[in-house]
Length: 262
Image (cartoon, rainbow, N blue to C red; front, side, top):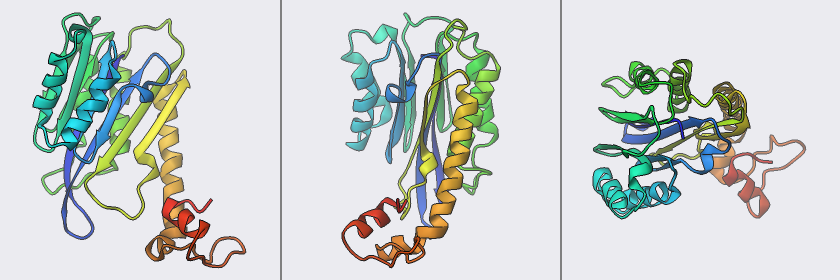
């Protein structure tokens, strides 16, 4: 199941409070990778791949939410998995990283662990794919002050693009591809960015399409903030809605809570 990246970033929110965000992004030469491989919560991010066992990702994040360290959580799951030799599993939590590539994964396969992030891949054209992905993310990781030059979702796409440019998944006979990203944060935000949970399930150009989807989602989020931010604060639809008056209960409150006002 090609290659993925899991990251942890610390930052300071607009109120001056310290926060942590976690992100995971993946791409492969098969459809709907976003339904199988990437998992994240406010406590960490996990990617499961190669001969995929979805429960490794799902339970891995559940264990992180229960307070287990990422190394303990993922090792425990692998120890109980009879197919571990065919798995790749990696991730991050608030303090550590973990990466595993079973000896029966299909080559080229391997992984890298660096400070605050991990990258893993299999059925790749070569080691340079994971190295390029890692380097691309590292070059744009936040500085000591937690500031970054773009949202994490955008930088995750750029990291995948770097690996893809190095050859990516070597199965060129498979036309239908996919890509996905997921970002979660400890920050309690009034409006969750639409661009932090994106999937392109079936395409011949997964990275390009994921980037276009991200750009449209970011544009839509910015428009929603401009139009509905006050409604969020008041838990009611703003009278700016076409021909509508502000609503304070029922469907109006539901739409405000959703943040789209559709």
